[in-house]
Length: 251
Image (cartoon, rainbow, N blue to C red):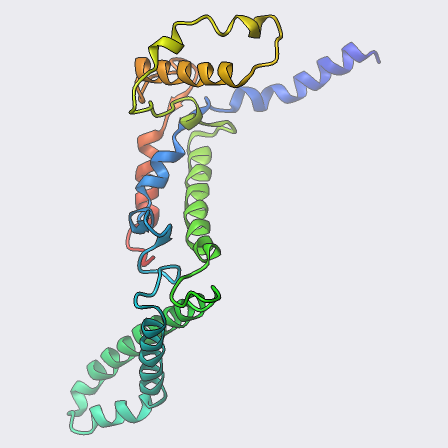
């Protein structure tokens, strides 16, 4: 069998899956990151996530010592939990004991969760030599991984819902325009001519290309329809799916 016949057979074999596949979908991962509840906790001043083990401990060594003391108090309470429960039930009528026990177990679970987070925070706050209370840059990995995991799950949902294998992230095609404005004296110069002559771009040409990119971003707008046909816009749908996935999650 000739190579041409082999190609025809291969094409016919793949044709059903091609015909059954849905249109490509487009989303913007920047919007998903901004919509994630963890992103609202990100502190740009420290590059850490607030209310997580990555957050700095205020007060330096004094703050770390206070955190350790609080951990010890909670550990002591947990070690004495059976006695505390017996004391609370001592004068409670039998019909009301179940409610007291249920509330106590909920309190105990909350303390166990809290002390676990506090221990991780105390550990992180002592990893940077000479800077007690400062957490290392790697301390944000769990939060970053959580965000990425949720975004990947949303993309998988979209692929299954729209029966498509191609998901286009348009963030690279829709840059945010430079708020400092355009340097028109540079933009109007014909600095791209050398590119068509296969000249190696220098720093000035690269600057012109960046300026041109900013110009078109401003002309088209951040929400420009750069895929007018052949693609389904699921940006809003993706955000809704992310909100559903992260709703009620205790980050």
